[in-house]
Length: 298
Image (cartoon, rainbow, N blue to C red):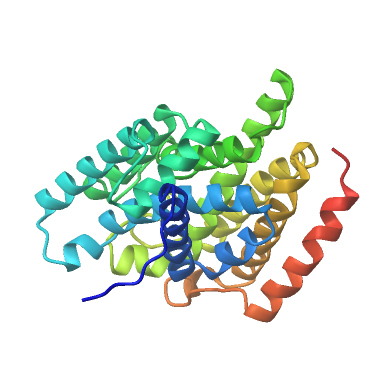
């Protein structure tokens, strides 16, 4: 059969583009808020963040039930996660991958200089989800949050600072802010998903919850902690390049709105009501982000 095709001198850029579009689809399928906030980043930064988050999302799905729902045994889920970690760690060392998500991640990992230690910390927390369902101490929770969220903030910062020289002191401040923001986002997600985590996955992340669930006092303490993290992160956002600042402010505003909605909800209602920010409110917050970012001087 005659086949009409266009000759491309170098087919790799087209494959790169297709792989990055695949990463974009993964994120769009799982997070409206993230997809909207990422639109406020500059094109290259947005692409790098999507490429990173697609890999993170797949690891999440391995441990959060998609693999088990496909019929994998607990041992097979563990082996799948271990294999995926090794694949992700090896990805930056090869220019071509048949898996488009790994291929797109490799592009950004090389461009942004993602560190193996951060990827390994992330997978260590994902692995805990397979074996640990209750976090009895603050130290255990903090260790989990470091790997599951704070290092993601550090990886995002690597993407934000590509081609943006900063002093050692500035980087330390930005890294501290990135970790606090990642921790805040994770703890907000824990509160929002309290019912699904306990009822469907059998997990209890907050030591304050105990067997009786979160009390009103414990919930208020967690909200205070989250707000402190958000405030610490906001304090250094003026040091971010404008290519990233608008998107980071937008995401922070969205999570702050979600925090406020959770704060207004009785503690007893958290396991049965999943709070979300409406699309109109999200859009209003996103539209304000560019103005807010311009008010901050770098």
